Every structure is written in structure tokens, then in C-alpha cells.
Image 1 (spheres, rainbow, N blue to C red):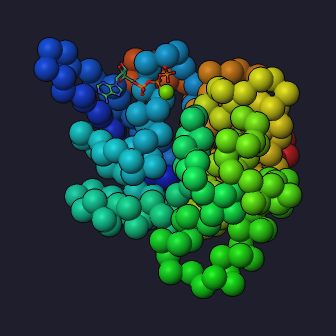
Image 2 (cartoon, rainbow, N blue to C red):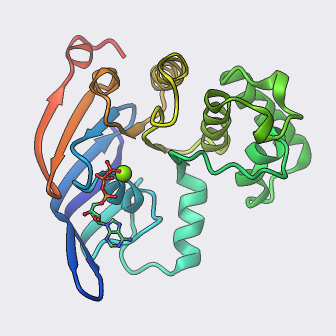
Length: 235
Ligand SMILES: Nc1ncnc2c1ncn2[C@@H]1O[C@H](COP(=O)(O)OP(=O)(O)OP(=O)(O)O)[C@@H](O)[C@H]1O
Ligand SMILES: [Mg+2]
């Protein structure tokens, strides 16, 4: 089984002018290809911090992180950007779509950074837009779409480069329960098609969809639960 994420004893300190926060306090975690991991825990326990370190958006203060066997220690900013672009798809809670670009151009962005041919870009963008059931909206702009549709476009953008790892922060946080359920069903489907997913969520209904739940408290992992689904081997 290929290991996608290997985190060893990570700490993260934020040094403010008056207060210092120790957001992660010795987190170790291994995630294999094909897993669907949910990270849960109360507000402020370090979930987004852990996800942004996994996504190379931020660096740990101490500890080691390997993604797809690449040691990320001491890399320069442009090396980190390149690894992120090739290996990671990141879905933000607030979607982070670019308003003046069409749906198609938003989803194409990660490929534009890779010098992919126009023909290949069209093929791959249309494929992921069909996967998230949004091909019929490819010429729309983000502000002409519902929240659930925007989230699906953000997921398509994360998928388009066939990353080793998809990171999703509160995918249902800004959605009503109907749209939230649709987005979760999409993530479950992508996982059953082989995607490795790490999702942060407050919602225990959704964390139960994952094959493994990791509970954080005050910057530490306090419990890990393997769901019955994964014990039975049903993805
Ligand atoms: N840029 C920052 N500067 C200073 N402190 C920060 C920063 N980002 C996060 N923190 C602190 O680190 C701790 C963990 O924050 P984090 O955003 O990881 O929590 P979270 O578990 O994602 O919470 P929520 O569920 O509310 O999103 C918090 O105490 C927070 O105040
Ligand atoms: Mg958060």
C-alpha cells in the first residue's frame, strides 16, 4: 500500500505580540493511498492548521512531513508551490473561486501552471466537470451559481490535476443540508473511485462517511476510529 502522508511529531507555534499559541503539539499521522480520513474536534483545536501544513500552505515549527515520499523539510517557496501543484488538491471552506473567470477557466487554473496543451486542458476540465455534474455550467461565472454548485466547482479544480491527495476544509460548512449531502455523496464517490481524501468537518453525520475519523483536542490526536465500512472493506 502506497503511503501518501507521513507526519512525524509535528508542532506548530504561532508567535503573536502578546500571546503565543501552540496550535499543534506533537501530531503523528500516516495516511495510505485510497483512505478517506475525517479530522474532527472543537473550534480552535488545530484542524485547519494541520490541513494547511499537509497542503504545504504553511510550515510546521517542528517535526517532519513527507508527501508521496517527498521530504518537505527546508524546501524553498517555489519548490513547495510546485509540489502542491503536482500532488495536492485543496478545497477551501470559502470555495476561493475567481469571480471574473468562467467555471471552465477556474477549473483549468492548476493545469495552466503546468504547461499542459490547450487540447489536453479542454479534455481534462470537461472530464472533471462531468464528474461533479457541472459541465452544463462551464461558461457561467461563480456568482451565477449556488453555494453547492460553487463547492462542486472547487472540488473539480482540486481534482483536475489528478493529485495524490485531496484536502477539504469544512466542505459543507457554508451549505444547507441538501447541498451538504450532495457534496458529501460526491466526495464518497470520488473516494470509491480511488481518491485519497482528508476532510475537516464539525459535522459528525459527515465524519462517519469517512473510513477513518481522527479526533483532535488542544493540538493533539486524542482518538482514532476506523469506521465499520472500512472494516468490512466497503469503500
Ligand atoms: N495565523 C494565526 N496566527 C495566530 N494564531 C493562529 C493562526 N491561525 C490559527 N491560530 C490559532 O491556532 C489555533 C488552532 O486554529 P485552527 O484554525 O487550526 O483551528 P480549527 O480547529 O480549524 O478551528 P475551527 O473549527 O474554528 O475552524 C487556534 O487557537 C487559533 O487561534
Ligand atoms: Mg478551521
